[in-house]
Length: 208
Ligand code: AP5
Ligand code: ZN
Image (cartoon, rainbow, N blue to C red; front, side, top):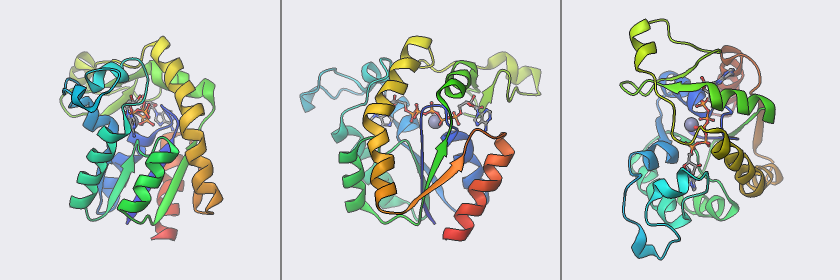
């Protein structure tokens, strides 16, 4: 299936995408991870405000559309089934995506702002596997893993606030874009991870 997963920063898009790729024959296409691997790429020839993606990301701002559109176009052209995470983040990107592919299901993970902040400030990553943990909600069992956990550069309090503001301003209209088309499947993302997964899985199975 061709799956789009929407949600605010910290809603659980990455966590549920990992479940989805394990259960279904799809590729995880994520602009956030792709950009993090290219933080220092020189984009100054695009006449952008900053010279690299990382400068936008560390401020919590959106990387210019031309950069992300190209990443997604390339990734989707090579994927069969996919779960798309982190894109589209504004209505222009949503319109671009319509020209690139059809979607079988559009999921929206709903989580309150207060919980989003708890999740983002407590998030830790395993730099060796890319696995996502949380200090309180989902700590690693292996002490060796625990010792090597790192925090994402944009999970500081100041940048988290800006990311949530940018979501309200630019990405809420994307939620409405799909809602207006009658294709938005809302999932209560505030539940425990396993319960969110149960709902996500069922929604995909019904749609695909
Ligand atoms: P991106 O990487 O896409 O970040 P984001 O949207 O801010 O989302 P996150 O990755 O922070 O959260 P998530 O929903 O994946 O949550 P997770 O599963 O990790 O983008 C980063 C930056 O790149 C942007 O700010 C922008 O600069 C740039 N960018 C990316 N795409 C772009 C685009 N299209 N256009 C322009 N710029 C773009 O979970 C979070 C935490 O909660 C974890 O600790 C996890 O363990 C925990 N958790 C998850 N589920 C639960 C649960 N049910 N209960 C309790 N805890 C949970
Ligand atoms: Zn993510």
